[in-house]
Image (cartoon, rainbow, N blue to C red):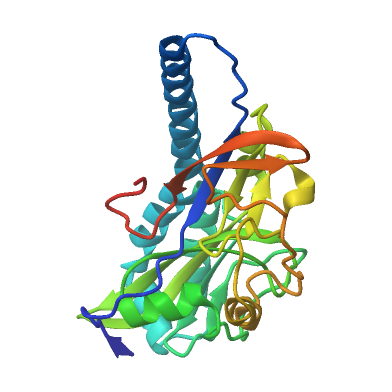
Length: 279
């Protein structure tokens, strides 16, 4: 059990949506060129904002609301505290129902030490119950801050990409545990694949987590230090992926990808700040 630390500021996990828009317009008149670029940028901004709204809806908001709802249930609280047996029927019924409404692959409850004390079965009866995930930021950030968190990673058990949404289990200002939902990438991949221009969902450290360019997966889109690379590997966020550079720096105003000139436009999506999902 941990008291909420109001001064603790967890690392803000966010995924950045990087929209690479081709801009190769040749117009003689400077005014016409400027006006066309302005209209073009307006259209791209509208496009990316719309896509960000879709990703927030399918990747974060619904699951977070469902987890908050069941985190206040007496059975969830007592199981996190250790008063009830692991995988007791009351808690299993609650997290199973939430997995259907949130379309999560798996929902599980971690106690204050990071050990799974309840989990919806998956893959013909497999379970996380008994496994410890204290090393995962989706646990450590929440248990220390008492705030919800968002995390994207390859599952260390399933080896599948997932969006991890986690919320604290709180009783009388004590954080007793963490509820976690692992969401599939199905809808996010569909949203990205419906775009004609190259588009990628990128971690705060610059690692591509989803894209309509499959060869970009787990590549870095701006330089990262060896210290940061070791830190990412230590958390097992992307399992043993080597995190090779894509060869272009998306932080630059313009870039070249596969011999073509592009402009990079980004917007934050699925931030941990539940009052401001899009910045």
